[in-house]
Length: 140
Image (tube, rainbow, N blue to C red; front, side, top):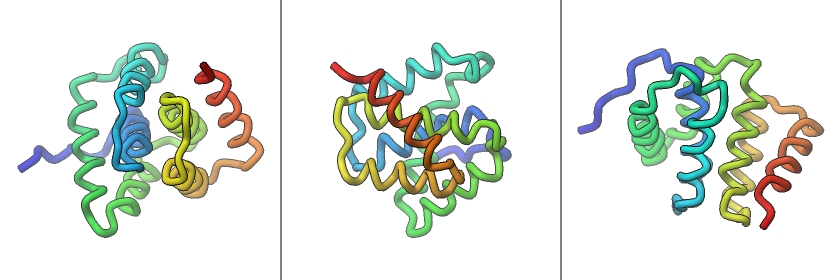
């Protein structure tokens, strides 16, 4: 039995959930993706006051939701309810960084990124710029 996450989620919890979800979307969580998530939490100002012990809880919440039939809808509902709109593009940027961290994007990850764009109503031109930046940061 897993510990339930207290509600409401913090905005940082939502950002963690998005990053974990994109990593798990292809059913193969890679080390490079976990390192990217940890790096983001350690370096970005949005996570300055975040309790890093919550990462494990949020990861388990996402994985539990992925096992449910309507889990993806529930995940996006939680994110829309608890993530301020001003951080929607941040969430998408973090998702793109995690997806690009291993140097390749598979079809499942691309579809999941498209779903994030749709659910968070990310403008297509803004999304393209965010995607281009992630690609540039993760080229080898």
